[in-house]
Amino acid sequence: MSENKQKPTLKGSIDSFNSVNRHTELESYKSPIHALPKTCDSYFSELPPIIIDQPCDTQPRVYWYATDKIDSFIWIVNKGCCIMKVLIAEAGCRPPLTDTILPGQAKLFSSNCFKKFAIECCQCKPVKCLGMAKIIVKN
Image (cartoon, rainbow, N blue to C red; front, side, top):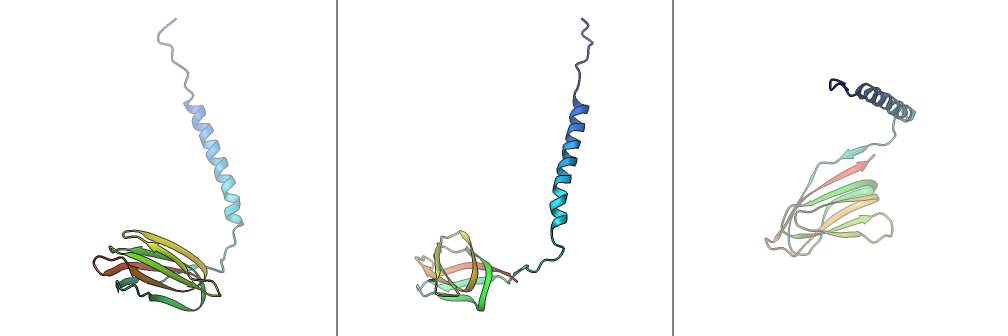
């Protein structure tokens, strides 16, 4: 046998197989996209950031409140060296949601009947809670 024999290559057939698969995949994804409604009744708005800067005296301070209940996300970042206790009040008779945020940590909260949120600063060394909050409201 001659050593000049070339091994058969499958590159052409693999490329054509991949293009067929890509085409089929694209076709299968086209249908649901076209089935979506052209207009949407609800959208989300991001409110300006809220700066958290308060003394560490274990007194909760309200940073934001709404006159009516709203559907929203609240993202809170602890930028200081203290432990923050978050209190989120919801409309109705429910007790407030509470959670702690450690230094350097961020947490996202969600509520469909959000009324207000407060921060309580505890276990501080530099005697101040520092951070930021963003509220994203569903309209």
